[in-house]
Amino acid sequence: MTHYVLTVSCKSSRGIVAAISSYLAEQGCNIVDSSQFDDLDTGRFFMRLSFVSEERVGEAALVEGFKPVAEKFAMDVEIQDAEKRMKVLLMVSRFGHCLNDLLYRWKIGALPIDIVGVVSNHFEYQKVVVNHDIPFHCIKVTKENKPKAEAQLLEVVEQTGAELIVLARYMQVLSDALCKKMSGKIINIHHSFLPSFKGANPYRQAYERGVKLIGATAHYVTADLDEGPIIEQDIARITHAQSTEDYVSIGRDVESQVLARAVHAHIHRRTFINGNRTVVFPASPGSYASERMG
Image 1 (spheres, one colour):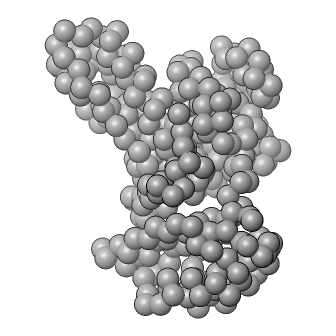
Image 2: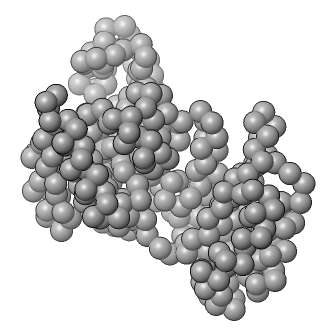
């Protein structure tokens, strides 16, 4: 049997679920699990459905046969082989905790992706990346060469067929044009002290103000810096007895975990952009074994 994932977003309307389930039944498919959300504020409907094809109906045939249903409800729809690994391009600057965490999860199979390359504006992590048999691309970025550097980045994206870009603490601002071109396909991570503590040494600023919670936010990248739709967040509680160095260490751990969970949700097609927000369906008990993450 072949395992598929169907994702749908469209204007809320009566009969959507019935139409989808009827079509799958006609194709000899069996639904494994289903999640749906009807947003009463925006009038949008979102659905993620996992199913198996017992009659070995091909992906192309399923997509083609579903077109009348999609057209009837004006759906944005995708049907994907659940075993197909998403091609992911990682980007990093000088802080490597998120990169190393993603590489480890990928290596042990907890993050089922194809890492097609790592891009950096520095050489610090070249050896680490090459030792994983992953192509490394150093693209230097300055004020003078920024358009040229971004053109090089786009070449890497096109040559590798990257479907997702993960900014694993990449400390350069991407242009509006690139953000629009890759809309919904770039994930960033940063500490959650924004907008209170901007600029250099945010952890020092937080320490001096006696902050008691350290957090991290993973979000889709848009032209509005650090304001894209949020995918995942988490916090860690701290005390007066901890130092600035403790703040940094704890913060890096939270950042790594939050980014990994955001990437995990995206590659399993559990995330939907809903205006300035997201709909993120949790992994259901029935599908957790195939989606579990260490």
